[in-house]
Image 1: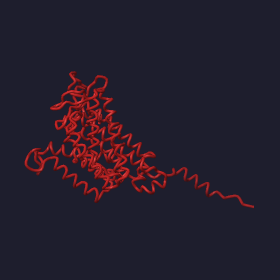
Image 2 (image 1 turned 180 degrees about the vertical axis):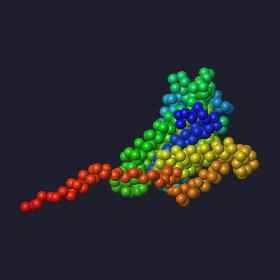
Image 3 (image 1 turned 30 degrees about the horizontal axis):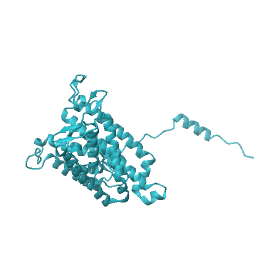
Image 4 (image 1 turned 90 degrees about the vertical axis):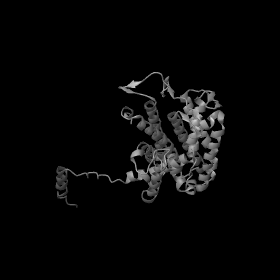
Length: 362
């Protein structure tokens, strides 16, 4: 993964960046829906909170498109942390509702967040920039900017490092941190408590698990992962518009965790790669694929074709592989371990000792 920027073209680098951003969001949704069993259709809303939060915290007040926007002008690294925390706070505000609702009713409540978010993103011009969106400030570390706006060219081993190459390492570091944190969370006591809440809230409460607290914690953690994914998307796009964070994005994230495997961190990453890379491949090779036309043409476009395909994949997973890609990996037959054999010399000594006449018992 670390060496890929030296070999991949811009298309594959951009595809990989989208996949890593999606993987972060999918890990968060899997903690909420896969591990805790809370259905959420509002994941796109929390990605938008993270993206616009980063732009507000890091951006300067001024003109953006057709609207005047406000910003705090904080350092980008500080803005990233604050945006993730802000997404968690917004998730915490909604968590009491998630603690009272179950199943389909919770899904409908979270779905309302998407429509509320779209209304706010379009009308809160001073923060979001309205329909035309708002530009994202490039990430900087000690004066080193992760953007093509950097006037200083950077070459490493003869390879020119532009925005995609630089963002690749940022996304990779964030993804590794996200995976490690999620695995430690799920393997520890919180993960066992969340699993108990998913299986039976009554039984979990009898065992002393504070159900409402853990349901709220899962929502906050999931929102923070989504906020981090939103910040990364803002950095990749360079400019964010409300159209990015619609209901279709929330459905895509549900597809990621179902195809990858509910409750599995690795499955969430695999599902995110599958759902994210597929439309990019269709768009890139549309001229060579039957029944698929380029974007804007008359017929089935790359995005629609990809959704048909992973829609069918969801049906197949639910019917034949409920554990998703992670379950298939666990079911893969492994080579049997060689049985331990007793050396011949040791066996002969054991036989000779066992055949020695025992003394008479008086």
